[in-house]
Image (cartoon, rainbow, N blue to C red):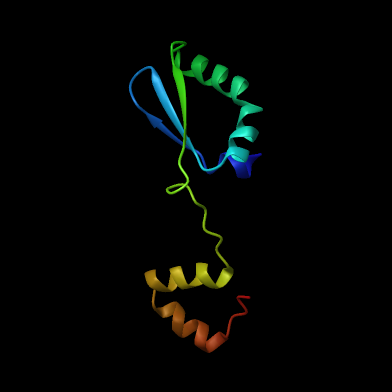
Length: 95
């Protein structure tokens, strides 16, 4: 359930409209199981019961990249090049 919903993006169009961008129909089906409870709680929390929800499928911008340990480490190396030297010295097992 969480994996399906974490790919969603909420966009505030105006004070009464929230657009929900979702990557796939299966993710929307998972969200539909809890959306009534979720939005009732949300409306109570913000004290705005006139909020309308619009759904829009967006496959391009909501893809999740699967990162291996090696790819994550390479991103850290971009931020701190000394990690490359440490990896060469210690020969980390990032498989």
